[in-house]
Length: 342
Image 1 (tube, one colour):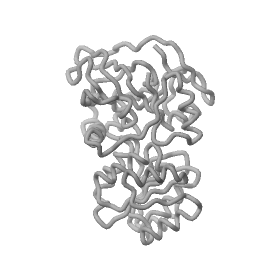
Image 2 (cartoon, one colour):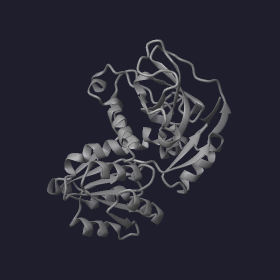
Image 3 (spheres, rainbow, N blue to C red):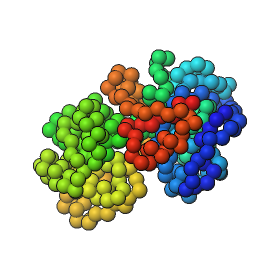
């Protein structure tokens, strides 16, 4: 099969012919990929930012936002059958440890793996090995390419919004920094789940125009005066700030946009957060990290997606155009999410 593989860090991946994946256990599932999202994390992977954390053997296949059709199942699989349309939770987990039993898939301490990120091939290929525990069945009419990026970008944004829902009652305000691949999903999730005032900050006017169309009440151009503009719109700071950028100083601007007793949700990464401890004490502010989400988050998000309340704005590329997709994403040319279609 064709697959996009990293052979060395800080160099372009290549499109290789490699063997199709095989079942390795009774709960394994082989999925024929119908769509694989291209994520900024893939750029970080190629740059080697995850090398010390995941330590994968090179070369390996990237791609952690995947949807498609069940192609083959292990002997013990009962929740899906060959031919089913599925979207895949990005981290197959053990289901037995305390974290899994509490529904916290991403903190699994058992036999978990992360295709496309850990030492396991991902979904920028024609086929992918996952497990029954990662499969969320979809309506058969669903086009996997339309929803693939919900498996990571979607679930990450939804997970943060879901955690913030108790704080976002009517009369509150929420700021979304970055209306790109994750941010535009977060805006829709906020509109679907809360009655808060949604304010979106981005440096790209086209991204802000999209934000208005999908639920933003106010938009602010990141032109150097945006922190003051947000403070004016929120009366001194927002109840919740969702930082989908979190690098190049934006993480510090997000802190300034967060109001007293407010919550700064950090979803992007690459920067370094610093704040005087007195700000924490006097302002009673909270900083909360987010990593992907739970299986239930993904299942809930798919209900919203199939009801038309959350829609992915995508640009499709053929699998053999993977390098074009990665370069376009790196150059800021992708509005919404790039999707590879084998």
